[in-house]
Length: 293
Image 1 (cartoon, rainbow, N blue to C red):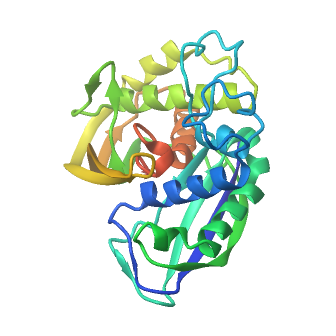
Image 2 (cartoon, rainbow, N blue to C red):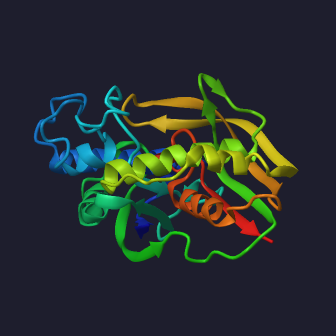
Image 3 (spheres, one colour):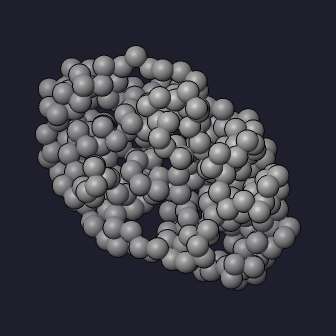
């Protein structure tokens, strides 16, 4: 799988105040601009069943709807989003004039053709002062860098995997928020996201024996757990209110010596590094890095 990654830069032109976790704020501002630029029916509160949903940049990228023919997902009003924000990881919240705010967006499948539309929306943020209107301050557009990334290309054999969760992560199974995270929980979550991305945004069906993959993942033994659970607040641009979320950050280590198909496990983890994992992953939550030894 190949994805497109674009890093955008904003320059503060006044004092800019952002929350510690910036993904929701940035995604909301870009989404509002995208809708303002491209939505043909702005009076609608939702894109659900909108006839323009598959061709409108906002409808497709932000309120992705399942295909009518998607039997597995036909009951869903929305499905996995094809773009994922990677917010600045710094704790800094106050930006002075001249400071640069960098953030990255990962584009999967058909969403790669909308990079230019996203850039137009970001430029509109600056020209219409959308940050200033939301009480965050004023910014100007300072450009972008774009690159292609091939998932899984740097595979090497391993015994130990260490995963560092960089932004608040929440894994839900059934109706329960998972507190004790196993390697199998991680792989199952990634498999669902990978299958949805491939099906909806690349128009493919991967013939992977998932039960067999999950059995392999069950062989991993947790050897390190340095997770920190915390309640964070994020801003919802739709409601105009802050919302609270229970999540974790920190390090998990697993001994994977007994896993036979290490290459597929690596591929899923490498995919997840760009897709993120768990709830609100398109906002920048569930972002992680991993290392092998």
